[in-house]
Image 1 (cartoon, rainbow, N blue to C red):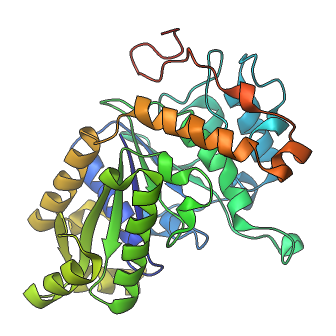
Image 2: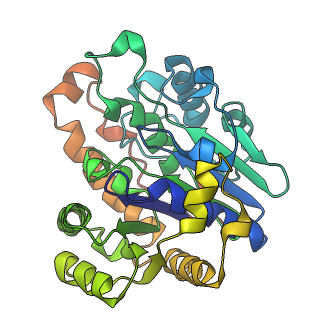
Amino acid sequence: MKIAFVGKGGSGKSTLSSLFIRFLQEKGDKNILAIDADLNMNLAGLLGVVVSEDTVLAQPQVAENIRKHLMGSNPRIQDHAKFLPTTPPGRGSNLVLRANDFTLGQYAAKVSKDPVVNLLTVGSYDRDSIGQTCYHSHLFVAENILAHTVTGDDFTVVCDMVAGTDAFAYSMHLQFDAIVLIAEPTPESTEVCKLYLDLADESGVAPLVHIVGNKVEDDEDVAFIRERVGKQPVALVPAMPKLKKARQRGEIVESSLLDDQLRHVFSTVEQQAVNPAITPAERLQMLYKLHHKLNAKKWVQQGYGDVADQIDPNFVMAAEKVGLPA
């Protein structure tokens, strides 16, 4: 399963992502790939690892090496530089089937060896590119990785997403089995959630979005979220003073911070992802449609040429028969 945690900046995306990873470890999941796609890069600190600047996905050489790997022998993509954020896998592509994928593993921070928990970090702006780049371009390679990843019973992807509605810039919103939209009981947070839901509805992924109330203190908070967002949260996370104090002391997020209520929240989230309202095969068709739309853009035609034929109509995105013709 692929699960994303999204919401307004400061809503608790990174904290809940790290706690969910600890929940998966505790219950015995053996293969977990974490991706920090947030500009602020908090997930490494929460999980207690250090990310080297020369391994972040935003580094041009790292992105080039990963795309070369993903390209494999796919005849429809003959140049790694032709990857768009919507470039789909096809027959001959190298797919990511485990957290310790050999190529990706070179750029991953090792959170745990048993079970395997690896962390990929997109990265932030570098000093030389201030005022000259868009953060969304750094997300392209993360989108390529996610599009070429096939999860299963023993392999889970957890993504701490870019804040707010930035996931709709290109294809990030199409890459997951479940999108956990975190709502705090504040006007600012619920307004972001409402906008996210509107865009999710417009793009066809609304059934994959699940509201989780965070920092909830009472029934009034729940009612506020429900009324402002327009949906009942599937789960509620209370304010966690114990966690706040632990972080103030510089401690990392450990499974000892999980309690029965959090385990119930994360079990609910997991169930939503295990039985997605939109299947991976259906999401792949949505990616094809978006790829055609992007291919029609003038900047794509000028910079990449016509890339419509990157779509392999006979490719099958299923763990038991990946890459086989339909």
